[in-house]
Length: 364
Image (cartoon, rainbow, N blue to C red):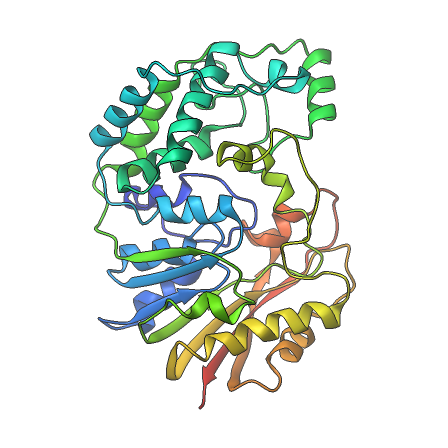
């Protein structure tokens, strides 16, 4: 695993469906060449895009989740800590009256002044977030919206919470009350300053773009005018259905509702294995429109412990009747060996399930 400080930006916002940075980074450093164009149709929090950034390569990421797309965009932002802090300071000094969410959850989750400041930032950034500096600021705030409290100082805005996914309101309220945990008054600008310095000091230049759209739709790929030479991706594992609603507080900050919505209508179907494979098949077929002949595709895939499924057979089924030819299928180890998707998506203990890397090539 790469540990250098130059890779800190990859952790700007924790996200539980992440795969480790060394997965795409090793491929690109060992196999890619100058001028290659990298595409991830399930970019999530932009790990492949960040690996491309530090490798000096142009990348394109696609994800239908507004939260995922915002985090991935932050990893392709070219800016400085000073610019981020100055922008945040200017917003917080504006004389505006933001809409502040009401209710018991919000009263326990955030100190009133902290919530007011976050709402000011939310309103301004949702009105205009087209510049690199604002995209970076938004990513920093998303990463600090909720997380654990420290004994000294603060690195998150919220009361005691998980950092990878948002707390369920009713459970969180009971927990905070039982443990007499009241939200602390935190200096919002100080946290932004600390994180801006940590994540954006001495970053390499980035080239690329993030598309907030559904990879199952052919129209999503119509704006891609470059010939892709590498596809590196990790689609959701079968049965992962709550990874969008579990980000509901971050979705709220991006302009969503202040209540959790467990609808899963705008994501890959998990109704049956055949429906799931059909949706993946659409993505692999759409990729053919923007990839050069003999483009390499590497897919990290696996399963979660509460679904009886053979990931190898499922991914093979999704690639049938496409022009992608499977070259090799190798073990990526089990989910117990690192921060992998299966680890983050199940709360209950269970036997580790082996993950696989599928190498395929486009033969037109």
